[in-house]
Image 1 (cartoon, one colour):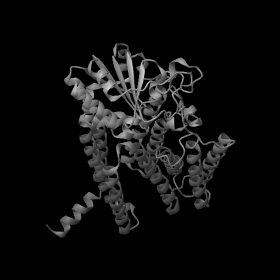
Image 2 (image 1 turned 180 degrees about the vertical axis):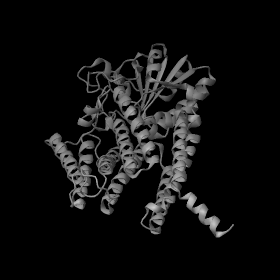
Image 3 (image 1 turned 90 degrees about the vertical axis):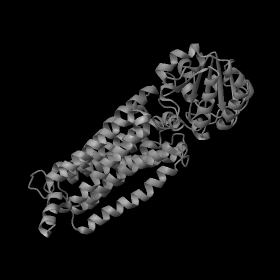
Image 4 (image 1 turned 90 degrees about the horizontal axis):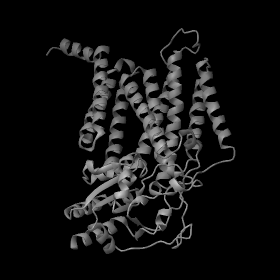
Length: 487
């Protein structure tokens, strides 16, 4: 092949039409891959397809050399890809399922941080010159608006995600952390960020000062918004911050003329917004009330045998639980964060098999916000190869509790709390729950009498038909399984 043919091939690969076509292929693969995430059987394949799409997008970006200041920029991009791969792959392989919500929070925050850094770099080096009368600073006004929007929202998302990570990792207290005049402080920070953006768009020559003001004000705002939110609302917060990251990425894509960022960002922003609303509805909360904070914290409940209403806790043994389960017709397993902490999903799967071998029908009750991230229980149970058709969402399983012989609650505290239906003074009153209290018998597996992430007591524990099996969930389930098999 001659040098001229090679040169022509290089020019073609760097042509706008080819790069745009590559971007179309990239976001098409992203969308197609995401359709596979609707079920556990196709999720792995969907992730791989989406990963290929992202790889195509990276290659297409590298081919846009005419927009780079020099060949060194390409090598910096490649260095970033290598560093990101070296950090991301081991982190994803080694993370425990109990720590998955934290990883989702921090990885989501990294996306928002990247958008904020892009805005910083772009305003340091400048945009394409223009003669637009409304942009006397010499940069396209529409580009500035989108870039500054991305900077504010991305910075809020990054720092807010860090706080969410700290609360989930228990580096920070799970209870709300509020300052006097919190709302006024937040409003002042937002005003500073927006005012700085307006001044920049008006053509200020002090670009470095005002873009720095935007990023700092938005950073403090991100911390201040999430700190007052209690641990019980963290699943909704993660989803909301994910939506913010997507919207900031889409805005930056519009500023940079990058189709993949636009499409991917809008998909993440739209899906995150829908999921946030659904989860807030599942908790009988509104997004504004969640942002206002104040719900949930790591507050200990009574540790003695008496409940808040003078009831007593009835303890049981693995042998007694095994007898109850073995002679039942229908057993419902309600998993929660306690199952995730104990890594008990595989043991639960073995118990399910042992019961089915005795002719017992077993179903799983999945609350939308059980655990600490959307779909947490689904992911855990899929890891243990639990058949997807055994999983029942809250609205589907609640009508079946009256005919359930035994419900086995494994670390699910707040989402099974009947105070949501019976106590108007409860912080969770009106929140849809798994109505396990309507079962003929309830067995709760707990380490202690400590409260859940919402920090409130659970009257279910003092119900006469409820018995508690104390200890590590995995060890308890394994012991129950052995007793079932021995019967």
